Length: 167
Image 1 (tube, rainbow, N blue to C red):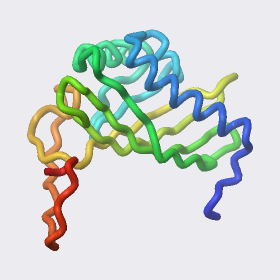
Image 2 (image 1 turned 90 degrees about the vertical axis):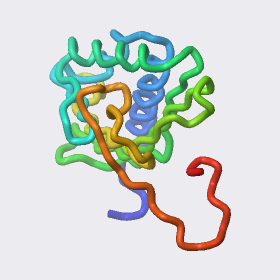
Image 3 (image 1 turned 60 degrees about the horizontal axis):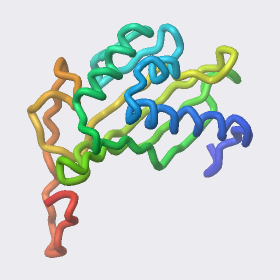
């Protein structure tokens, strides 16, 4: 793989549009539109465990996400890397996700996302693997209470002041 993937510009724009809608539909509380970004059999995996599969479960997951946040919650996807998938009708996307809740003093969750996007007439998310990172926790994984993660915070080995995000 070269440092720049060979995905055409139009497809890149379409993929970025899906990712933007992924964030905005959650913030707007539109679970039906959010679930519609996935294929009918789309899967959401949280820390290795299936959180939702299919339109009905994805719609319910979007409702749980909305209920788990506040009116000041925002979802952001950044550092998007788009590569060809196993066929011409598949795209692999790696991205970072931030859930920011200003009622909870700023950044509340950080995710490593892996999207598998498939062309079924239009581009749709076939699967999303979300891995929560950067937080020491035994509490439920994000808003999905059926999964937990225990990730140790890396220890600093120098005298530099720590970032305000990890203090």
